[in-house]
Length: 177
Image (cartoon, rainbow, N blue to C red; front, side, top):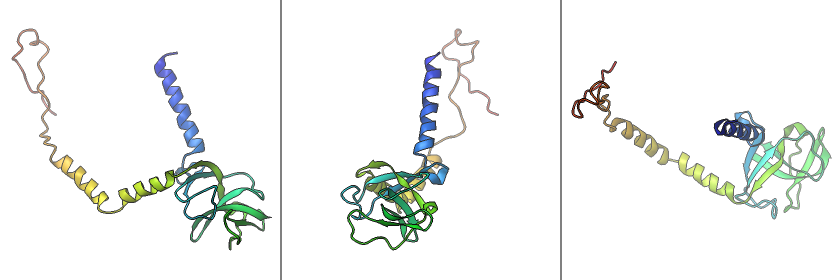
């Protein structure tokens, strides 16, 4: 088997694994990305940590689960309840339980991957890229690059095959169209 074919299979395998495990749910995958904000899950999760959650077939008391509310996605530990009538959740660093009681079908998932401090960096990059004036400057730079490129439609001069040996000074511009 050639090296090129082996590399292709390796790349295809990695792409398949990425799609199965870390491809975002909004693009059809099974992973949801959360950036921790707040101290309710300290010391396990701190502000700025990136947590990738994936859906599980069942949840039970003691599991950490993420669920969506009107105020955003919350990630806390299940302390009581069940999947049909609703789970009781609370943060590891909190005394009170959450006011919401999500059912099993309302839970987004459980932590699959935790990367400390990366989420804060990603949010900063996202904010810089999406907050004016950066998008306007990027659009202007692309526009100027296209307009000022100096493309006149001409191509580089090419010597005809027959005259390559005959003369080094005979050049012609190929026909366009």
